[in-house]
Length: 67
Image (cartoon, rainbow, N blue to C red; front, side, top):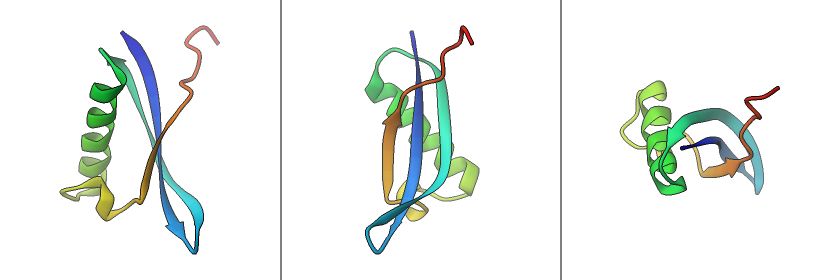
């Protein structure tokens, strides 16, 4: 199982502004992690779909658990 970090951003005039970051600590693969992050972000912001609050969801390097 791997750790994943997803960054959500809203683009305004082509410039991305960070809205939030969701970390998924255990997922079998990146696709499952992406789905889990989308659901968690939507629940956190009280919306049906994450795209109501953000335009982009990007996979970012996860923090190293050793540090």
